[in-house]
Image 1: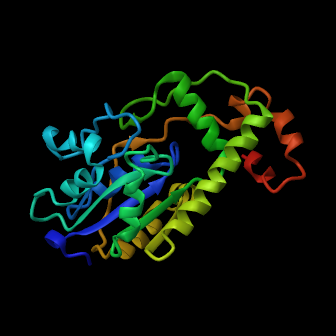
Image 2: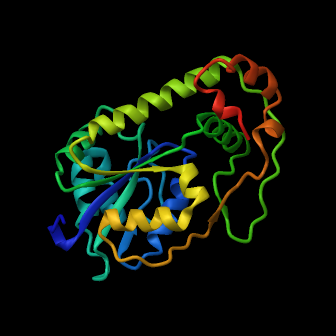
Length: 248
């Protein structure tokens, strides 16, 4: 374990619309864990309620992002906290002033990496487009599912999104290849949450216990209902390795 302040450091490496909000909520329900949201969201105005770093330290991000990261990891949390992490999307910290964050994390030898992926990249794209159109990014317990109107997705847009996501998966795995890493699939977590979480807690070196999250799945409609040209796209992808994305 990384014993700086007696805590293990970790990141959730992922992309938008891959279930990271839900996983963050689950891990935060463990009394030994603190996950602080998107520390390096491209918008500097993004202010997660889970980020414990005082405002004066957050301002460090603009002039010294590594000092900002270190201040987060060294923050005096409650004594019960033994594991501290944040969500890092593949496209975060890519500006000229923040690129060094990636190198710094790679050099943090005891950093643990949870690589969260969504296998069905078509559904990932659909979820992203629906969220952008509705500006509705998260549903909490007690809130009814959103009912979306269908939309059209162009073939070239699907191809482009698949290639970007697949490159991100491969780049992330290679970049942190020397770290202890747990590969977690959105679909596996959705299908068998209890068993997958038990394995993830073992990976982190945490005692097992039931985990809960207030976030709920936003969309209850199928891609066939939501993509106007679903049949057209499915036909074009029929002889490709991505045809499985069109199966309900």
